[in-house]
Length: 283
Image (cartoon, rainbow, N blue to C red; front, top):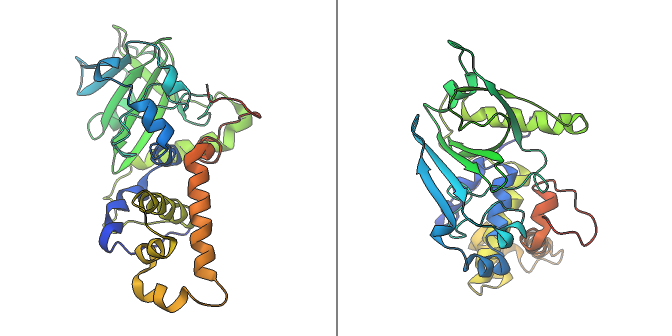
């Protein structure tokens, strides 16, 4: 169990509190959507690119691209989400090549009178979006308690005439431990109890949050010292910025370099776990 702690949410930092419960693939979208090249590609998107319907059996959104999504595929995405939407809101669906350890369920016909634990545990309390790509592959985005879980569906189609039963599965034995960890994390959606009032962070998510803050500050033309003030407060910066050891200056420099690397493609390997060879595209 990783150690968690609270952080200051004073001033503009409160805007980033929602990040604390996001999974690594949602953090990947947060960094990707700040890439100016992705935002330029996203300008070509249209609301007509993806059809949206409501499922007849439950309050579930059904999404399906109407045309090839080549620009989105460059970034590892099934289709291009709105880059103005954050990691919880955006319908960011990663393909399995860049996000190999996503939760996987196998769907099979449900016998008369048979129940489905996954359906019964999620549909009443979660917001569910079903996505079908042009090759008829199916995915789910399940939202709840500030979390988003992407699920890859195998087996029979969820959209068939007969009800299905979904079972968690791990198809890649070499990645068993990683995929089991992803499954356990996904269960946070249906755990009993309320979400903690104060956001809880780990050392890793603190660095990721501070990196996003730094990128947003740089976009506004702020200096490194001004970024340090946003993150640490004016009093701390006044006391430590000119320190001979340069500890605070080095920390800000590291955060910026790390964040820029993640934004400019590092999210694929570091946050999604993609196994990309040299000079290989995401899709």
